[in-house]
Image 1 (spheres, rainbow, N blue to C red):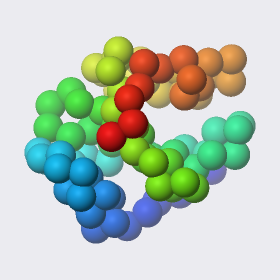
Image 2: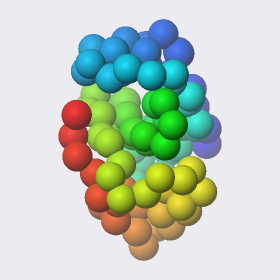
Image 3: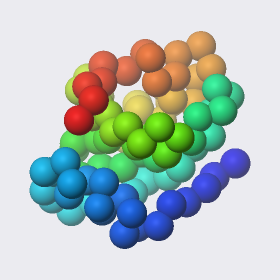
Length: 88
C-alpha cells in the first residue's frame, strides 16, 4: 500500500532540521512491520527516511542509490534495521 503525505509537511520536517537542498520524495512504504515510512532524497544522493508514526527522520549513511535502499527496505529479512542510519 502506498500512501502520501503532503509535500509541504515533508518540506517542513526537512527544513526544520536544517537540511538544505532540493527535496525529491520517492515513495511511501508501509512495510510488513506496519510502519509508515517515506523515502526521499535531498540534493544529490543524500537519502532520508521519515517515519510518519513517531515523527523521526533518519539519514541513510551506507547507501547512495535509490534501488539499493528500496531493495533493502522491501526485504522482510532486512528492512530498516539493515541500513546504516543516523537520526537527524
